[in-house]
Image (cartoon, rainbow, N blue to C red):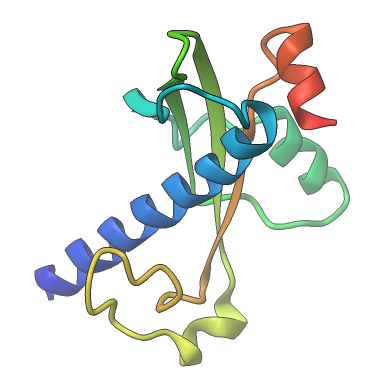
Length: 127
């Protein structure tokens, strides 16, 4: 039903944002202001280099990819790459999210969230 689809989608967006905030806390711990989402792009037919490499070693393809642009407290823009994977073995443990902040309800969708390697600083963030 559509309410479930919306709940799952919102939950995945919240889970993605939580992962981005984890990265931001590591890379900019003394930020004067919290990061904010500026924009995002869905790129379901374009696999990230990391997803492509994982496929070479037998990992399944992601079912979706997003690029999220985050503005840090100092105004710098950072692009994040998010690959979404399906874990069919975990579908029996899925629950319908009760709120959009219920990020642990859907266990069959796995997220790979990381800063894009767009600059030497971004590479440093990933180390």
